Amino acid sequence: MRMLSLLFGHMLLLATSTLGEVGLLSGRLGVDGLVSFKCRWQRSEYIGLSDSRFDFYRPSAFFGITSRVCSAVVVRAYGDAANLPSPQVLDLYASIRLPAGLALRIGQFGPPLGFEMMTDRRQLKLSDYSFLARYWKPWDPRDVGVMLIRQWRRFDAAAALVNGNGINRGFEDNNRSKDFCGRLVFRPLADSAFQIAGRGYWGTIDDAGRRFIGVAGEFLVGRRSLLVVSELQHVLNAGQTRNSGYVQASYRLWGVLEPVGRVQLELQAEDRYDFGLAAGVSFLMRDDDLKATLVYEYRRRDSNSIELRELEQKIFLQLQCAL
Image (cartoon, rainbow, N blue to C red; front, side, top):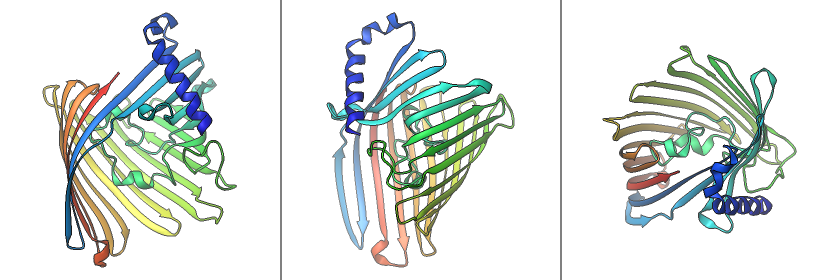
C-alpha cells in the first residue's frame, strides 16, 4: 500500500502541475476533486452521564485522475489527498471495455454494494452514511480484485471477486479464500428513475474460517425534484445476525434549497437496537459542486443492559466545494 500511496502522490503532483494543459490532451486526461469542511456540536448521554462538545473537522480533499488510454481502456486513481505527501488511496484500477456490452475492472475499487455506496460523494444528501455502511462487507467497503459489469436497457448487472480484507493491505489477502459480491438492478420503465435492486455478498473474514454473508434489497424512485431511496440489509457476521435499513427522501426547491430526511434502524440482537433520525437542508450555490448543508441527527442505542444504552444528538454544518 505504501507503493500505491507513492504512485498516487506522483500522479497528483503531475496532474496539479499540468492542470492548465488538460485541454491539450484532447479529453484523454480528466481531473476531479472534492473538498469539505465541517463543524459539529454533539451531546452524548451514557449510563446517566452526559457530555457536550464542539469540534472542527479537518478538511477532506478527495482528488481523482482519469486517463483514457484508448477507446477501450480507462485508468482511474482516486483518494484523499488531505495528508500529503502520503495520501490515502481509495481507487486505483483499470476498466476495459469488452465485446457484447461487457466491461472488466481490475485493481482496487468499490464493489457493487448498493445505491448509497455507489453514489458520488458530491451527490450525497447527508454527509454521513447510514447504518448499513458498517456491514456492507467485511473490513473496508473498497477492496482489491476484479469486477465484471453488464448494462442493458432495463437491467444492470455486476459481479466482483475480491480479497475481502479491504484497502491499505496492498494486494495481500488475509486468508486463502476470496469473497464474491453480486448485484442486479431492474428498471421497470426504461426511461424512468424507478429502480429495484438486489445484491448479495459471501466471504470469509479470517483464517479461522468465520463467514460473512449478506443479502440486501434496494428501491429508488425519482420524479422531477423528488428522490426517495431505501435499502434493507440482512447480514450474518461471524455467527452474529444484524438486520438494518433506512428510508431517505429529498426534494429540490427552486433549484437552490434541498431539504432531506432519513429514518434508519439496526437490530443487532433480540434485545438490542440502534435507531436514528436525520433532517437537514442544503443551500445549493452551484448545484452539488458548491453547497452548504445543515443537519440535525438523533441516535439512540438501546438494550436490556444499561451499559449498552446511549443517546446521541448532533448538529453539524458542512461546506462542500467540488471541481
